[in-house]
Amino acid sequence: MVGPGQDAPGRAARRVTTNTLATAVANVANKVLVFVFYVVAARHLGVEQYGVLQAGVAFVTMFSVFTDLGLGNITAREIARDRSAASSYVGNSLGVIAVATLVVIGFIVGLVNLLRYPLQTKRIVYLLCLMVTCGAVTGYFSYVFLGFERMYLTAAAQVLQTGILVTGAFLLARGGASPEHYALLYVVAALAVATYAAIVASRLVGRLSLRFDLRQWGRLLRTSLPVGVAIVLVSIYYWNGHTMLQKLHGEESVGVFNAAFRLVVGACFAGMALSAALYPLMSRLFVNDRGKLAGVFASGLRYVTMLVMPVAVLTVPLARPVVALVYGAGYEASAAALRVLVWWGSIAVFSSLLSNYLLAANRTKAVMLQCLLSLGVNLALNFLLIPRLAEMGGAVALVAAEAAGVASLVALLLRHGPSFDAARFGHSVLRVLAALAPALLVAVLVQRPGDVARDVAAVAGAAVTYVGMLVVTGAVSRDDLRVMRTILRRDGA
Image 1 (spheres, rainbow, N blue to C red):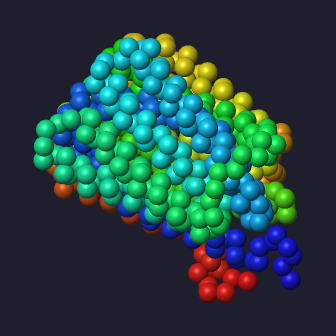
Image 2 (spheres, rainbow, N blue to C red):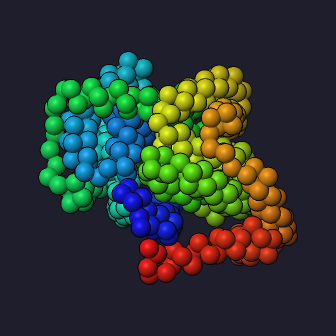
């Protein structure tokens, strides 16, 4: 018998895996499209004009996170626990977000003029301000989909957006190189996706409307603001380096850095998808079954390790051929930044899982303090390193800041987190390293500078070798296979 609010055996695992796999498959398509878009844009615009576009995108993105105020994350958590509360949360949250978006747009326009950015950058920022409203709507509804454990809807929205971007990029590539045209393309894609997200959300929640219940606003904001502050800190942490690079070293440096940054975000998508898929399950188990929560968290750590360690290790020898294959001539300097930034991306996946556990456990202030620590380290190192080392300084600053943040989360979880078998986890890490060793050897031996076919074979051969060795070394256990069989059975109840 399954009690209220509890999952039948196999159902939770099946939902997490289905969400992760569906999101991963959609994200593969999405990341391919994203890469195509940035390759077309980067090749068409050239390093300097591409840097102008990305400087504008970074500036707007850094402040657009103020529109959410943590409401999305809290909405996902509460819907996962009680879906009947969805209508109230969504209506009042949309009201708060509408007001916040107007304030943010006014702030962005004022600040870009106060800082006396070049006229071309201003025009791009003005266009991208139109994207802020659409992005706020889409971003919030992605959390609603997460709460209902239908992450494939978010993935579909992302594919729609990148599909529009890629189509538009190929059309723009036939004409003159204009960053403003690409900025307008961002707006068109964002509007289409926001419309899609609103239609789908209305089918899950019911009729959508803005609610202005000020008492409910107060209760929502008291709960969400620590998360909102954390999101703002993370955004500034991710994007302030772009702004400093543009001011100190020009648009070309931004282009080199962003090319590597985008590759890392794409390479780490599977780990991030798994972390997100576990969030609603951990939120529900924190209320209903904390004993199972510890097991879910431990399994999440093990699977994340299997997903991100090959990305970090194999990128080091394969950075140059990957950059050459994706971006072509003019981006050679991105390979060095990629070898550093990949460690930031890998650590960030662990940070995401640890943070999601704490958010599920109502420890929102702890996550906020961790983000504040990471931002402080990042800003200090950016001011110290970017003037001397340009994009390499920005890369090192991101890695150090992410590592500091994860260290603080680990220290907190060791004192107050779930207990799990640390020795077993350590053995899993050793098995993953054993699986990586032959894959790394394949990558080093097969690749050959300037030989595209050999470079592609090196990437594919290393991936296949790693997956096979996971089974040989026992990193993928019989329990894992048993869980997969349970998930794939038609009736998991």
